[in-house]
Image (spheres, helix red, strand yellow):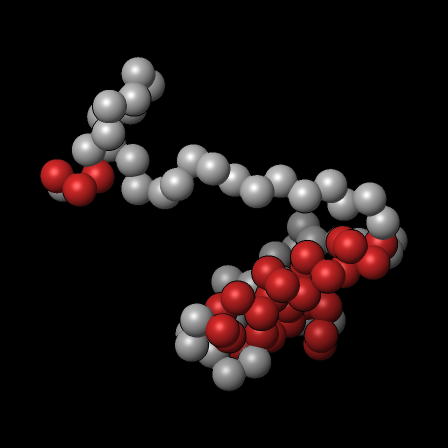
Length: 77
C-alpha cells in the first residue's frame, strides 16, 4: 500500500493516474476512431483474440449485434 499513498487533500491512496486525456468528439470519424481504439485495447493487452471476444466490451454489439447489455443503442441511431 505504500506505493499507492498520495498527499492529496481528498484521498489517502490513489490507484489510477488522475491525468485524463480528453478528446473532443467533433465528428463521426473521430468518434468511430476512438470507439475502435477502445474496442481494440483488450486485444492489444492480450486479453482476447478479437475485440468482440472480450466479455466486458460492447464490440460484440457492434460486430455481431449481440451483447449482454439491453441499454445499448447504436451510435448512429
